[in-house]
Amino acid sequence: MRTRYRAAWRTAAFLAFLAAPGWARGATILRNARVAVSPEADPVAREIVIEGGKIVFVGARAPGRYAGADAIDLSGAVVYPGFVDSHGHLGGLGKSLESADLKGLASAAACAAKMAAEKTPPGSWVEGDGWDQNRWTPKTFPDASVLDAVFPDRPAFARRIDGHAVWVNTAAMRAAGITAATPDPAGGRIVRRPDGQPSGVFVDNAIDTVMRARPAPNEEDIRRHFRAALASCAAVGLTGVGDASGYGSKEIGVLRSMAAAGELPIRVYATIGPGEPGFDALLAAGPIDQGMLTVRAVKMYADGALGSRGASLISDYADDPGNRGLLLTPPETIESVAERCFRAGFQVWVHAIGDRANRIALDAFAAAEKAVRSKDPRPRIEHAQVVAVEDRPRFASLGVIASIQPSFATSDMPWAEVRLSPARVGESYAWRSLEKAGARLAGGSDFPVESNDPRLGLYAAVTREDAAGLPRGGWRPEEDLSRRDALALYTRGAAYAMFTETRRGEIAVGRDADLSVFDRDLAACPPAEIPKARVLMTISGGKTAYRAP
Ligand SMILES: [Zn+2]
Image (cartoon, rainbow, N blue to C red; front, side):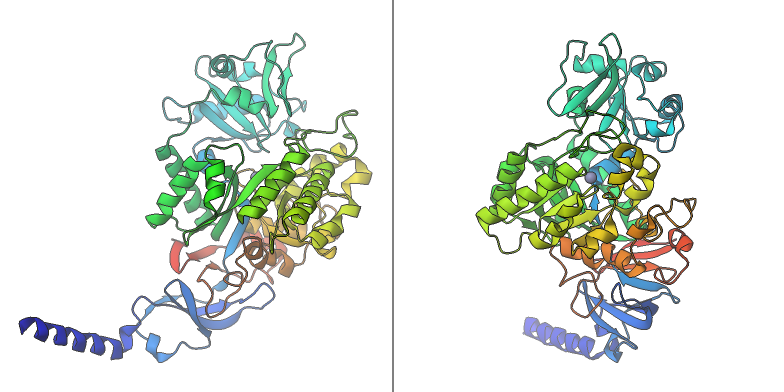
């Protein structure tokens, strides 16, 4: 009796609760917002209601039934579809947040001094990131002796800005057993002094010969790196990230447990890597969809990078006759792995910088597609940096996404022409030409190579100027993108590149509540103001991932 009475009372209370204006508990209203519902749309005064991770209302005034919902007054801020970085490295960013930032430093000695000032957890190698000999005088690779002067006993290493070379000290080489007798591996180079002794710089596939001696990060390290990187991404307005690291089962395991525990503040679309532990099992198990975490892509490397002359070119480097760069994966392997991925329902991402690497990737996708005839594979070329003019239309005809990094153009412009020759530089960083040729573009930063801040990517895409506004009018401005097309790189384009264009990339009822809120209209403000826009709020999956203090 008592139980029945209590049940009846509960029902009545619940009905009263439903009838009250505040019943839409759990809903959130964004008020006083200017909403740009798509990359093409101008911001218009709107209210947005979010419930259960979805957008349930967009319009002039939210219906009365939401009157009791949590309200956030945006005071005229501009709300965009969630900005997504299509290509970054969360683990690398997390690590780099713990290591010395060497970007922009003017000498090897300055890099060593900065590393000495950093507090490195005991037991791990001292770490630096982002040196670039192209900024030094003379523009030559650094030597181990410069690091030895600061770290005589403790292993120390620093990645080149493009991640395609490391510079280490003698203690690190000793730990790895590197001597004059150590041969260059296929697809890599150990830079040597005139007497044949390794000088301390290891390029592309040679990186692993020294770095394999470094103690591997444990799961707690990996989790800490992911956590720091995701917080950093949320703070620059990103609601999601495509992670191009090509992880193994350990990193994927950490991401899965973070997703299950609700510890992913923004969405992660992760790739797995052939050659990484557990790859076959991960591929066989099929794509993973855990809401905030998706794992359904495989990352391969066709070549290296232009800065270290590792990009694979059709003809010689203009500044190094006889050198055409390095192929990191044999073309037939790219093709066979692509075929396996298509069959397993995985997307394929191939890193291709040089024109030869781009052609090899396109050929591999064409062959794999012919063999498998999968319905909608959406293969991606990461970077698509130097593409032969005759290969441009193949992106559209083969349905290949060009996953581009607008900041690369402005970072590389001081030396790209020297590497490529004035004639061939016209084939490079040709974002507008690729788009005109029908390629679908997605935008990213390749963080931590470049900043993860999408405002900087937008700025680079539309101005082709560096942070100082140089060169005036932009570097090869015929390849810039319109403001709308640049916004689409990070919204609709990124959504398409992750198979989510019907759920994200625009603001509409029924779509996921992934929103980036800025203090100004990024399509209308003067271009120089884009990097100065303030990120006010980042909402991913309906939850606040970041709110400006
Ligand atoms: Zn990358």
